[in-house]
Length: 176
Image 1: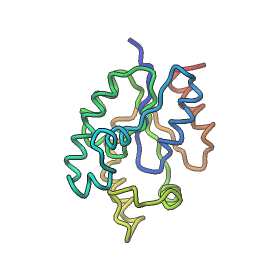
Image 2 (image 1 turned 30 degrees about the vertical axis):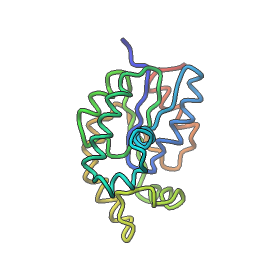
Image 3 (image 1 turned 45 degrees about the horizontal axis):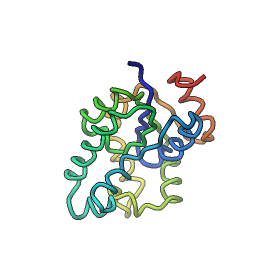
Image 4 (image 1 turned 90 degrees about the vertical axis):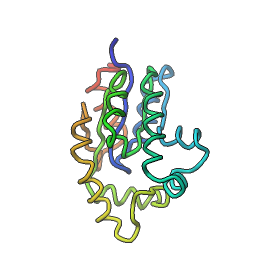
């Protein structure tokens, strides 16, 4: 069976949610938008920062893997994955069953600007005291995971959402 879904991966503030919603709208009523972090929140009944604080990152990653396994069975979905989804190879293996894996990336300044605009309090993995250095450190840790997982790579820096959506549609051939 041909792939009919898209999983958006990438570091925080690269546009996964914004682009994912616009892409879903562009692809039409047959498609549904899903955020793995929102599914975790619904399933566990806690915010992401609460899960990190109370249960720890390793427990969060277990929840994330469970959600990835479930959404990988769905068709005609656009999935916005949490930034650390690539830390567990089985998440990507599951997602690749029905989805094109699209890496959205942006430069450090763009990520910093978008994160500050959207509020850092919802980003539990970032140490707020030296935000830029922490972003760079986490990006470096995950860089090879992102690159290995990605089937398509799109830099979202200074691009309009419509342009990014067009690039994804062209590269996945989901709609012409």
